[in-house]
Image: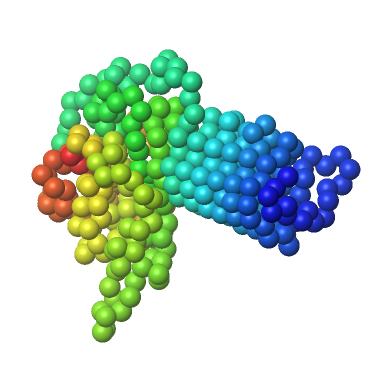
Amino acid sequence: MTESTPKVMHPPAPGSPHTLLGRTVVAQGQLSANEDLLIEGQFQGNITLEDHCLTVGTEGHLKAEIRARQVVVQGSVTGNVTAREKVEIRRTGRLMGDLVAATVAIEEGAYFKGSIDISRGEKPEESQDVTALPRLEDREV
Amino acid sequence: MPFAAPAPSRALQLLWQHLAPIRHPHFLECGPVSQSTLDVLLLRGARLYVADLITPARQNTAAFWTRRGKTAVFLADDFLAQIPAIPPESISAICCWGLLDLLPREALPVLVERFYSLLQPGGVLFCILREPYLAAGAEARWWFETLTVVGSSAGKQKPFPYPAVTNREMERLFPDGNVKTFLTRSGRREVLGIK
């Protein structure tokens, strides 16, 4: 699963939707998977879950370039995040890096520093027509 | 915190008229980012940079102050280091909301100069300044309800830490002095500086 093969602690209960990297896991390297992943430990490197969801738990600390279908940040992430669908930063989350996603949700109280770019399939009709705004008769002081 | 009624903004109308030809404007948001602001700006096609300068300014964060002798000195360069890496002259608009009312006078020239360096020619700095008679409200927050409507929390408890910035000061702060000021009924002025 990874070059450094982080040890998986507290394997998820049967039926759990996530593979869990527990809070005592410290790993670095390349991580890719074909299943959803919950990280509560520390990881440094690259994470690729092209068709799945990465959740950074409240105890998770990542310094990583992340590519996934969906990313949920409840802990701390430093690095760029690319999500095909959605990035969510929950109120306990901290993300420092550049986001590219189709949808971005940031809860009040979350910390974010970086840039946000929407991955868009160039549809001009989706942009609001600001040229149609009424002209101003400026009341300047 | 109670919310004030969303208010149409004449300054934002002018801002968007100014940016109308730009299909994907680059925005710098200097407040704690709200979901509404995200939705409005991203739907407009903006690339959004976020650096919450307002929260540490409002909290008067100790990390940005030092003492030289008996004088407290604001560390403007450390404060500005919170802005993410942005190419110079690449930003179409900067929303700094009420930030200028929360910083000491000596920090304002450095701050505005930095903003100016990030703005592309024709770029716009949007800010909200209190009127001198408004003594409290430093905890207020603002966001985009729509492209031209400003939402706000009606903070009225926390006193402003510094005297109000006058229109003339704003004209001196902004290089070339191309500043437009709009009165509102909320005790605040909306100000556009156009590069």
